[in-house]
Image 1 (cartoon, rainbow, N blue to C red):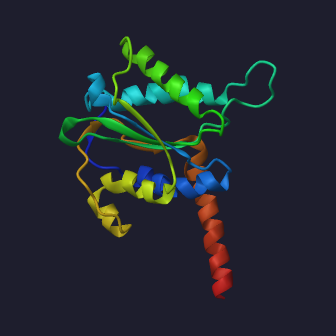
Image 2 (image 1 turned 60 degrees about the vertical axis):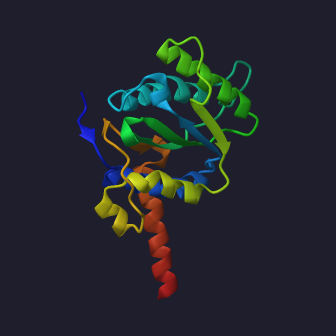
Length: 199
């Protein structure tokens, strides 16, 4: 059993805070905001991280990368997302920012419902478990995601920390194409350009 954590740690927090600009830089901006109320499915803070990992890796990543027969491009393209799991009062839920290719919104909503049915074994997903909305302000949304940062880090990064409950396993992360290998070189290049301008 993974150790429980009460806060988002530095590495995950840094990638989360860089995720919006990085997604835009690679041409995969976040446009879809998903919340899944895991507690309404009977999942606890002990189960949430493992459940959502399986949903991402076994379902979403395959769906997004799949190239339909007779086509030459993936259905949705490289999986691009950022996520956070919270469990205030032990009510586990996940917030998820995703890039969904225009025209795939209905298909994504339908398969997300089917994935949850498959992973839980329930007959159908109860009303109110899945909420999907269009993202109009990804920069503001990432700060909402980051409210569960370690309070010391949150204050350093000028974010108001909020108690978000204890979760077993990972409680935040991004897709690989938004990780440190992608955002750190971009940040370094930006800082170099700023120094040249200042000089």
